[in-house]
Image (cartoon, rainbow, N blue to C red; front, side, top):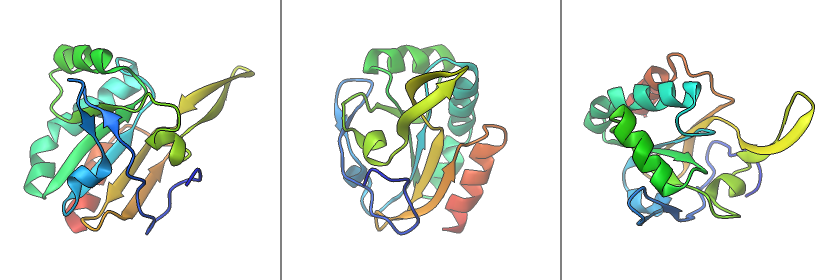
Length: 157
């Protein structure tokens, strides 16, 4: 795909690594709605708040028949420490492979900070319908109240 994901697009079925070292891919959620939230880095202020907010609402997402999966390039062991440190209940996956899902979606991209170019994750959330197609895209997400907004959209889907 290597473009920004759009509504109606099918999600590439690219495997990622669970914190325990297993594999997870979008097709594992076939027939179920899925919220994929891509964030830059474990244990940074905004990413911690975002993960805690989604975790706090995990029960509501579950009641609505919606799976949650947070994705960053952090290694699985770092995810495990992050989950334990903050008692996170939203599932996480590591998308560390070159040409991974975030690369295919154009979410892992060149960023600029104080004139320095580097590769980084654009904080993006995708709501995937039970048909495996993207129903809603939030790009360059602002963390405050984001999980609540995604929950409302997921419940309405």
